[in-house]
Image 1 (cartoon, rainbow, N blue to C red):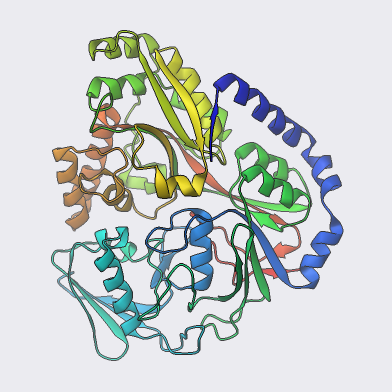
Image 2 (image 1 turned 90 degrees about the vertical axis):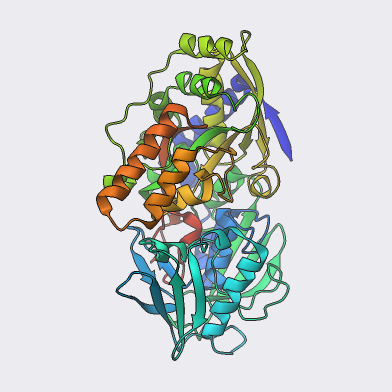
Length: 512
């Protein structure tokens, strides 16, 4: 479903709602919430979490938080990352790297079993990798440096690279890279996983009902049942948390999060991330194929003002690249985004052949802070002669259907543990998610250099040069890096928030 809005009308109605929520949260939420609903959840030992309705559960296509959350509960990754971007063993209990930096040997744990009772073996990992490679999925694109993959001694997986890649193990943590049983059929519809929860019932458009896997190698989850309740609208999910119908939510706008933070009936968490929102132009066709147009969008944008207005001080201001403060030494802290100058932006448009400005459609997912961000962009750009009609898109279906095709869109990139993943997925000319269809020979060269170099200073210099190029002439405007939020009812504990919300694990959750 698509919905068109104008900046003024949408801003008023949305602001009115958020003001009511934020101003009255301490009393209104406590009044609306049903203690009986919370007690019922604790008594039947079921944890219920609100998510947007998933569009697909095929690991090759899944990308939204709700989709990844289901896969993460039912399956295992070889390796995962924690909130500090450290590598954490999962199905691979340990790993070794050869002295030449080319061969990784991963020990597949011996105590893992599939939900049908059969043991997890190295053959399952091999089959999963081959499945991705045969389908040319985005996971396959992360394995392009692999020369061979084979079973080693015992239950080990041996991966040999054609050239060093110091971040290779992080590629194995990709959100789509859950391990499937060899020969799996009806993938995305039937779920025989090895994860901490088993699927009891999937009710399309309503919920996924899962029960604790008593045979899980990591220990039986403390909760007996985990339910993901689906909502087509983020605000409906927020209302369900307020009313006690569900116990928590991890995708919500900043104003709503502040409202929950003021209420003793809820526990809230927030962590800084590398995740970011951006506006991007297609760079392979008019008008975005003219660097002057791309620079006009940059000059028409006040990033600090948007960060303050949309993020309310959470997260950090962006500088038009996916590499932010969360990446420490790799971040080009000394770079300065151009100050907003609508007149200079309009002059660049005229020079590019658009003396009367531009009229475009801005495609925007319909959840979280995205509508607010689109409204802020539209208001700032209009003064430079960039007139946009905002078209709201159902979030999960948008990523599956239209996202890569539109000329101008707002995109949310979830947190990644290393900068190379963003660059390999979206900014190299041959990247699978190169949404802007951007191609720059120097950027490609630098991405490839950073991917393979074992020289830390060389990698750092490459990342910083990429940031400067994207800031000067790239097809994206990144106004901020966002914080990840979590709201849980006060009777829920034992859940550690992950920077990518869908990778949050619920196996340690307890109620009461």
